[in-house]
Image (cartoon, rainbow, N blue to C red):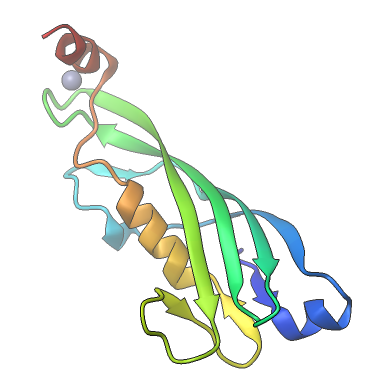
Length: 136
Ligand SMILES: [Zn+2]
């Protein structure tokens, strides 16, 4: 499940940073590689920090595995994928920031969707094809 960073509650407890380790089901709509799907939920290891102006920075990484058919030979293939997360959420009207939050709590879903999308390879290869491409 995707946790929420509840800024109001955390600040009331004097907590300004912390770790978020969780897994979540990625939306299969994100995948546009033929015959490929997510093998398991995406693992996220994130750290958040709340600054004085209530901006929330979230950094860390996501890891997931894709399974399906090799994009070259259609043999069974499996590929581990990692992605970086580095995002800032602000309360105010965004100018050049990516995300904002309302009601004192940060919803990470859109950011995680973007992180998965950004990390996705355009294809996956079986071990034999990966080997061949390395040598060519
Ligand atoms: Zn192959």
